Image 1 (cartoon, helix red, strand yellow):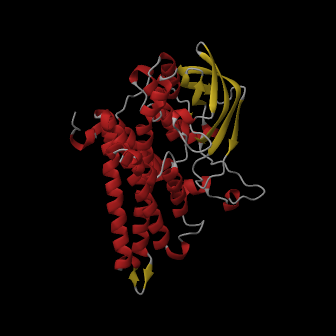
Image 2 (tube, rainbow, N blue to C red):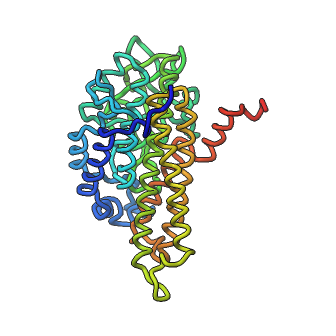
Image 3 (tube, rainbow, N blue to C red):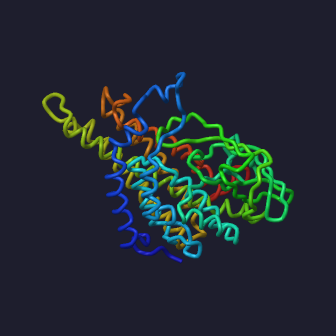
Length: 389
């Protein structure tokens, strides 16, 4: 099946994207972002009173729930919107452009896994997301692998119930989640499980991360009672099928962050003067900015190509999603580098808002695989593993 015109991005998707931009401009401006997550640099400097937890405005999150954003990827059969992936990508691009602190992306990660599981139990938990509950995916081990076979969590099953033990690492926005979707090893293999964040036997240890707009934690389970969502091998397969969607929304967030960095630096180059000219007059400034624009447009094209493949060409979803995540990671890194450099002496300071987007993009680049990782996997996918060449 070939892709539709404009990646299938139609009037409904454009309306959601435009609405998101207006909403975030009103409720999540850079001034509000600065007050929320960058008021005190000492809070993130490792001092005595330091806090590794990213703040977020729960009143704004409630408005997001009312707008139905968490329900977008949830199938209509589970009370959601059933929005195409290109629409979800368009929304997340705006979220990244605002560096919006919220559990939206982590909730999407969990929703993708539940959606791919396709069981009655998964539907029940998807209905919770559609109803406004936040979630997160707990599927990564201490070494950073999210391959189902590498999970550090074990499960003892008893019918549709299970007792979880072990630790899931690198869990995104864990402090904001109402429940977790967990990958765990049972006697029959790797399955998917759901458990409330406040269930007995569940504890969190926050990680200190560079991104002040998000939080991350290790989630420990000690004989914690969970519900079986999808048994082996269905659970492991559901997680694998969800990964292209996860990579795609991360690429969207990176593209949005890179766009903010580009536009902000262009505006600065128009007003900052040196040698009786705005610095944007000089080729040493304007040429790198054009390069940033080209790299980001390239990433945006690959992003919507990947999103469209998830909608229309599932056989190509993994390939295109890896391409999108790799290019978006590199484009965001380049945009952040040039933004700091071209802002001159203030570019690397806490008082310059560039650092917020620089750090968010840095976290996103590594999350679920950086550019080098995905290009290596692409090589394996397209021309075979190194050992077989």
